[in-house]
Image (cartoon, rainbow, N blue to C red; front, side, top):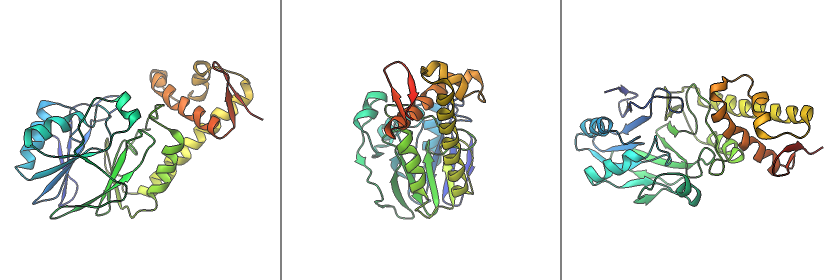
Length: 269
């Protein structure tokens, strides 16, 4: 059992599903003392679910999911069934097309407050990585799921993922009082706004690289553009980077900077 005490009210349990997309594994968080809220039960792994139940020791009252990707939400169904608990989260039409089915008992509302006996949780809608992605704010701690990850770049995979929405959601977080980011993968981030600024700058730098390459190449297909824009990334990761490249190109098309003829992309000058 990989459990870490974050504060006197927050404990992190990391699932044994480490990999390219998940880093050391998906983080499940338990918030509270007398009454516990679980954020992201993660994958439906027997040992992980049993550990959550063991740590909860009859005190769990709610299950929250940040989004419905397979490394974050499938365990919610099992945990809900085992303990007869409500699932809080959100599904959208595009998330239904991509993700495994899940029954949401309570659809979370942006900037509402969900009260427990010893803690409150505020859902914050942060589309970008996924259309139904929510972060959760509690006493200065922001649980970011896949919106912000420690030591890794978030994949934006259209059509459910959207680069413009992702950047706007990152900026919006700075409107809230956040002391520490607790990501869905990796360790706590104690300089949250610096991390957000660096993430935005990284994305815009990559976007400018797309623009510069289109200036050099004229009209080009996405497969040929990929190794030129991501020449600083291990080629083994290029199939994953292709998703984010497409998201950047869609954003540039939305902003009337790039055109697509069905096969190739070119710059509008």
